[in-house]
Length: 501
Ligand SMILES: [Fe+2]
Image 1 (cartoon, rainbow, N blue to C red):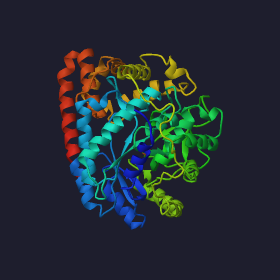
Image 2: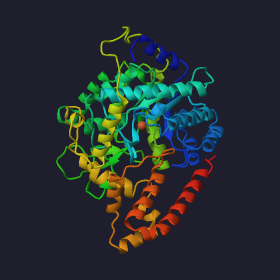
Image 3: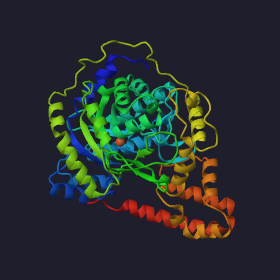
Image 4: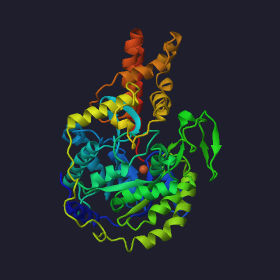
């Protein structure tokens, strides 16, 4: 692929179909209950200008649309692994994109936000997003897949204003580590140089880059943010997210501290960093230092194409959402009314040159797939963090064991489904035989397996546990199968529940 001005023009042409959305909320249909949330916001007269709706069933999305009263409903997709080499040629991926396009049409969404990250690599399954390998080849793969996603959306969807919903790639958070050979802003610039997509800049994610890239060792937060946004393709940022940060629940037993802004954070008692080991946590209060970062970003004159500013509040208690959104509206209403009248798409001040020097993104799918497999093996504790992806100045693995030994085992045993609660009878029998669930974690991490349907961590957990029992206690497998069947029925039932009116 070759970078040239038409990519920029195409982005701006696409953006012209997207009106400013204002101050919104990024929500889940069920968590918390959307009807109750909107009821409280109406009552407090702090209704959002838009709702970015997280992936749900078509029926649930249709219900939301029917009750939205004209409120714009952009979409937050899930399950498209844009980092996977060759994904865009895989039938399952294309089927998932078409399903996503269907959801966009139901909601009439002007954009599709999707994390530029993955939960499944080479048979290894993760509960929460794993960031990309930040390499030139990794960027080439994302660019190729992003173009394919946009092409399917273009084919299947049409906005009332003309054009099609725009793909927005969100820079994911870091959770204790980062791997790769190029800086994160460079990675996204390489993508936007070849793909006419927009971006979502999540302010909390930016903080995690400060924390888990090791940048805190050489500069303060203000300087870091300045340098980060200087290098980041800020003119492609169409939406900004702000969400909570917290010590992860897997570390919660370790002692807690009160942060300078009064919120509770944790300190794990080690000497990695003077900063607490906070991670992206949508259910947690938003620390005030994130709004200082947001102010710094909003003051940057290169932020010319912003269309929306949202608090991400899925899994957050409703009273806290109402309180935070009221304060958010008060603080940013003036900023937005100043920004949007003048915020017309324009090439003014942007790159006018044709092809740039290092504009060719090429990669071997096999080489990228192999690098990702090695990456997953490192995260699973099956290999050590050696090689260029882990040893250069843009990598950070001092706290990798926090992920490998605490966070990931917690995901496998507790996050998105507690194994003991899911399989009580099987676990009891395993306990009686002295077979610990730590052995299940080891089994999970040492037995990668392919997936032949849409990714769902809860369902992966069921399949993996049945496999585990069939290996360590084959005489119990009938009981485990029964429990698995009950779980699948409960899962289907839960997904059939209509959305709140
Ligand atoms: Fe986000």
